[in-house]
Length: 313
Length: 259
Image (cartoon, rainbow over all chains, first blue to last red; front, side, top):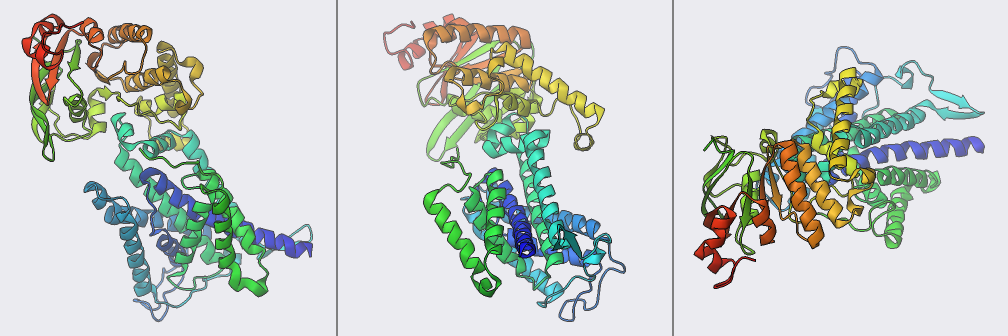
């Protein structure tokens, strides 16, 4: 009983951690540009598939190059890191294609919702062309994870190692990012650009470069999430990131738009609530997630930790 | 005359059908305090926006030490030595007072991203130097006691001084002040006047200042330009401008005299 509960909580916290990663990705771009990057879910997929390929996975029969794969797989850690960086670069590309041209023309910022959604659809379709629509399981089981056992026994409870790793890695990523934003020179500059890009630029900060940095980090967070979920569950198809993207969006609103602690708290709350849905009723999981969202927004329209009013100068 | 620090040549800006600035010319000499006056809507802030790179001009040129800088990005102009404040303050309200200054000190002294990640000795030294400079400026503008406060919570006069400190932190040669005395009481206006004079000495500044309060400008400025409906109608020392019939008519009201 205790064992089941512990496993349940860990599962919840683990998927909550991934939701927090996705929501933080949204937060970075939102705080700098005041728009949502709807390609975030697609970047999540990209991260999953990149991790798969980097770990030595082979392309399936419906893919563009059936049977092709890296001659030898990289270790899990390295693959995850490189896949995150790769997703970050593709996030940069999304910025160049879907956001930068609109900004140069001083277009209505809302238009970026559509262009980024379009960029996301294109990315997912490219994935489908390259990899096929079939699902993939990761090449080796979790014992490839730096030689860790599949199952750990903690206090008599048996815990899936990968879930623990998921939680630890997302926690580490979130922690490093928050510290960087709060303490470092670059983080300070990014916060300044988020508050007022023109003024930051008048003070000598290259705002455009900081915007690109935000997109890179945001894409890398989504890619990291995709890789983690891929390893722990599987890759059910190129669209799998989209549902995480939507969940991340719900978490973003739940926690409060633009709030970093809000994204983390919202992610954990969402993950834990989902985990408490009995498996017999698992079809209701998403419904529950959004019911929570509605309930919180009725009571606190600005989200759990959001500022009362979002003001944009 | 020596080489002007800043020159504005035939500068125009059109917003749709409105000609906000119409072929404006003047030159600012190094070390002087140059005032800009004119009724509301005369185009003073537009002129600041063109000089600081916030808005591109429709035609004309801006020269910095004789070289064209027209239409350059604000962060490049800032690196050249140009900084400004805003009429309706634009502080980073969510950041602390100290952080507002540290953002502006970002580029000086240079330290690399790699150094930051490795927290190298060089990087630590640079960060310490930035902190020292920030505290010095806070001291100078009487803000040290407020360093940890969130900028959005400061009293109005303190915010004005913080914005000046932040502009100074980028170590400008030319400081553009957009109505720095707006909303201050007479005593504060006097203090501000002294402060601007003192800052010019200590930081070897050239200052351009927009102000509605004519007596303050007359006292503070070496020279003045007068704008009316986007046209520069007068240029000269306070005494000259005061006597100019066109100024008296357009700005001070017919038959009136500058108080």
